[in-house]
Length: 284
Image (cartoon, rainbow, N blue to C red; front, side, top):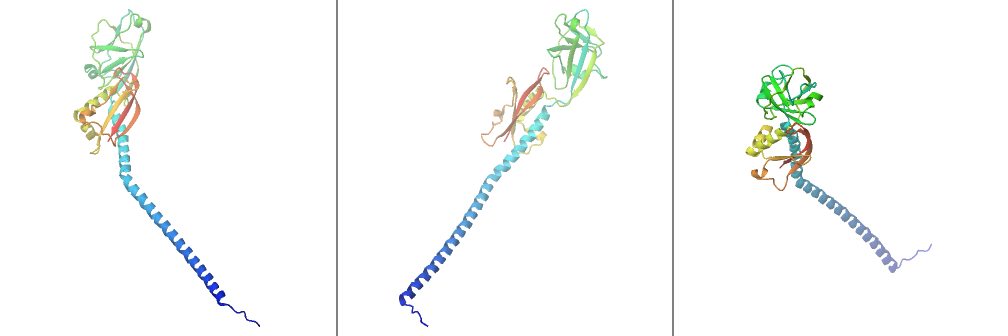
């Protein structure tokens, strides 16, 4: 049996190959460890960045949520302030009259009974009388209500139909009348109490109240937390009517952190006509 002799050069070559493999394995292990450490550090930095950003914007998010809740509160509360609590609408229908006149006198319509108008509304001039095409004047004569004026021939040909609106929030001065045709057989077609109608006069009233003390009395009545301010602006759909407090006299509206909402409202104008308008509320 022959034994193969290993030369010194072969032994040196084998040693060098082994060292290379060991060095290569060690280098790969170090690189893999460095990659894992880098990944962990990147993840930690990312989490710290998220925490920092959340802590930075959290106060803003809380403020935004708080102001949005305040806007919703004012949206409900101000609309309730604009509503009328005692509006009654009475429909009156009558046959043609003869001889022709330009006004009628509704007999015994003032009183405390059914289908009668309470005397206080007459005394305080808190009526509006209208039909689909015009508004009428009125005056009191004893327990009768005189209503006019019609064009010549209208009452004799067509009779009359109109609605009487009465509420403490309404106002229309009486006009002197004479020679009106007395009518006792008129028909009260309906008597409706409105509890949800918004009146233009109530919007004006809240505007005037706001300007007395920059809205402090209103905020106290509504229970608004201290440190919150508000204002409002009401505008008719055609832009001819604008109702808003003089906010400049109260220091004006700040340039930042103001939250606002705008929404439509149906309301009765000064002539008891249904109209559409838009209410804008701002809080800060």
